[in-house]
Image 1 (spheres, one colour):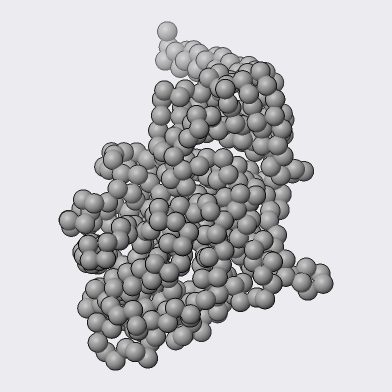
Image 2 (image 1 turned 120 degrees about the vertical axis):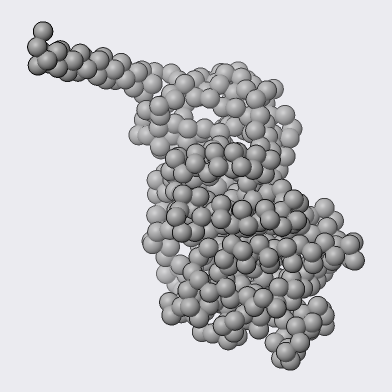
Length: 511
């Protein structure tokens, strides 16, 4: 037989196989799209234990806290931290570096006030150890909102984070570098910056946080997104770049200062690292995540680290990036837990449709289910910008009155934060449509009371009937679509549910 005939037969054979596979996939796709598919819940197969959900106080709180409308401030904090709202249990407090005192950023909110009285600095950095050199009325607008949030009774963790050292400690004399990728913290100020953070944290803990409970965990995160440029003529906000070796040296100093402080004052403050700009940097050639991790390993402080914090920026809903990161962490640091400490949708404008809610919910769900995040935090809890960066928005209505608005992203967050409390354990939730033809995905947790919380996203344009295996009979349904937000219904003796088109649904199964 000629080679030409063999080649033609081979091509025909391959085409036949392709047609068979295509037909099979087509039949499968039709079956899952129009038939009943199954979610199997397995409480015996468990993953991470949830620690909480939160957002930051950065930028807008300075201005919003100064308004005279106390009812609006109460409404905003209830929407974020109250039971009728998101019930967030983590408050991320931004310790400013005083950028607004020395530099006029294009957007004034992206600078900050500092508690430290700069006039008390005469060139001796030991002054940062002395609480009397601080004025804790200087950030009173943020502190008022902080207390309102704490008063809701849901906050179990406060993370004090810094975008930049105080400007008197920087090479540039500002809270950003004069040039891009400048290591802006002076080497001789490692201890002073540690003192600065510890004095401020301790004061706020003693005088504010403790009023609302002795069991609130206090975390200090001294560095935020060290890989980014944070400098040059186009600097628009506070930030500080650290090369990997520089950051590792500083972390060792901070750890030593923190340990000594805890021993001296009987506190139990915890160090957080390293707020990586985003976890997709594991595949970058110039700002590799693992460059930092390898430097950290050289120092004793790393032995005490239990959690690694990273940001989700740029990862969107991409499954591959999460798979790469999860594989990297499991291969190199299998005992380390992952915190997602910042995320926002990096797009201009505000999309009020359910599509943005579905998109946001997917980001959260995939971070929980694919990288085993034990906590998840949005970037700005409140925004004033025409940008996809806030959970709630402060603006003015047509009559010029201050108002607070929430859109579908806010309600998407609530499907997780309101019903997956700290201590809930993620359980296996396998879905029979493994190829994702019908647009449904899910994540499930066994709650602290023994019930099961199952969050389901259906981003298709068709309702889907889902059979539930391993759940209980009594079901509470919380539904968000384009037309409703957190609509609650309850029914008994049901082993199947119908997930509406373009919806986010949380199901609570109880015995």
